[in-house]
Image (cartoon, rainbow, N blue to C red; front, side, top):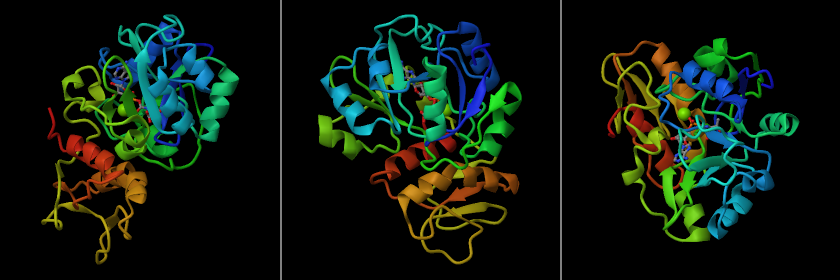
Length: 294
Ligand code: TXA
Ligand code: MG
C-alpha cells in the first residue's frame, strides 16, 4: 500500500479493496479496478475515533454514535477538517468525508500498521453484490490487488450503515447492520435521505445485482428459477435462515445470491423478508439488486 498498490482485506461487513487515502494515484486505481464512477465517493477507514476527529468535524451526535458503535459497522459522513488526509478524488470533490472504524481484527491490524487513513470500497466490481468471502473478493477484483488478506467469511455480510451528520437532522444514507432503531434511540429521529440519492450513489438503481434477474416477495420458485427461502421450508437448495433469523440472513445474503447465480437460473426468486430491524437493510439491498429503485 505504501507503494500505491491495492490490498484485498476483510472487514466485519464485507471484503474491501484498500488503498492509501492520501495518494490520488492509488485511489485512482481503486476506481479503475471497480469500474466505479468517479462521482461516487469512498469511505476512509481509520484506526480509532481520535484519527477520525483529525479528519472531520464530529459534532455531539456524531460523537455519541461513534462512541456507541465504533469499532463496528457504522460510517459517519461529516464536514471535512483536514483536506489532505483523504484526497479529493477519494471524496469525489465533496467538502464532506465518510469515516469508519472497522471491527475486524485483520482490518484493525492493517490500519494500525499502515498508520494512515485507508480508503476501501467493497471489493466487488461496480454494481455487483459485495464479496463476503475471500474467494468472492478475489474473483471480483483480486487481479487488481498487489496483496490480499484472507479473514474468513464476514460475520455481518451487509455493508456498514451510513449516517450523514451535517447541518440539520442526521440522515440515514444507507441502512445497515447498525439499525435505525439503535441510532434513533441515541440521537432521535433520522431524516430520510431520498433527496441525497445522487450524493450517496450506493443508493442508485441496479446495485448489488447478480447476473440473473431478481424477483422479490416470492412464495416459491417458478420453473427455471433458483429460490432463496427464509424461515422453515421443505428442502430448498438455498435458505437465508431456516430459523428466520435476520442476522443470519444478512450474513448469507450476498454469498447465496452468488451461489444461486452460478446455477444459471432464469431468475432468482426471493422469499419475503420482514422489514423490521436488520430487515430494513436486507430489503434495501434486495430492492436494488432487483433494480426497482431509481
Ligand atoms: O461496510 C462498508 O462500508 C464497506 C467496507 C469495505 O468497509 N465499504 C463500502 O464502501 O461499502 P462502498 O464504497 O461500497 O460504499 C460507500 C458508500 C457509498 O454509498 C458512497 O456513496 C457513500 O458511502 N459515501 C462515501 N462518501 C460519502 C460522502 N461524503 N457523502 C455521502 N455519501 C458518501
Ligand atoms: Mg459497495
